[in-house]
Image (tube, rainbow, N blue to C red; front, side, top):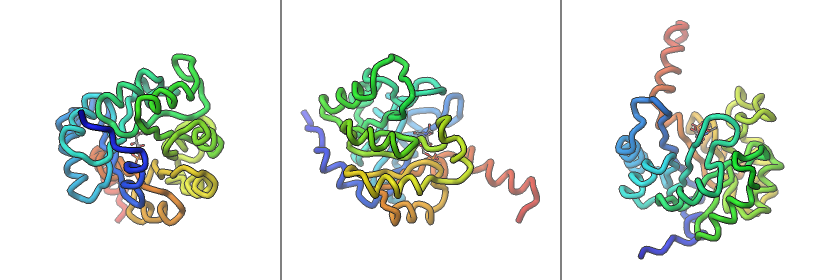
Length: 234
Ligand SMILES: CC(=O)N[C@H](C=O)[C@@H](O)[C@H](O)[C@H](O)COP(=O)(O)O
């Protein structure tokens, strides 16, 4: 049986690197595990050092195709806590081949009523790593204290307390604040749309940078161009 890579090994492999999030949303033409597998391979060939992927079928497909560090999540629902919302989801993500389980670590109630610690403890007990997706500084501090191996700024702009952040681009102030105080590595994620923003995230203390939409979501990318053309801007 293959041994799981060590926590230190995975975290060190990701230092100073680009992680590409390969996700398609329900009903979209690219919502297909083999398509996501190919997108992940294309990202690897472009220089991604890690992949973030959603859903058990996508995770199995990506895991079977490459051996880069794999951050997995399971989105269940679309409101409130939906990113790997319970320990059951987290263990399934691990079982599907993820090295790191990304889970919602915000302070909102979880659908099964259990605490965040239950999910973190379950992943740790099974030998996996946890990436805590947070929206605020306080949530990041709490997740690190509970044993998360990585803290990501993924949910800044997507919780009621932070909706006003969404229009302001990536929350690099949150990256810098967390990186300046936490002992665990901070991952910059969310609305990083340019190479310059990715580089700036590292300069501001991020351990690694996750880019999704701007690399792997052609519908959104096309929309940006289509809107510019329609408004006559050059
Ligand atoms: C809020 C939420 O559900 N974020 C999700 C988390 O996995 C994904 O939909 C994002 O694409 C991912 O975080 C990467 O961010 P961006 O696509 O902005 O580079």
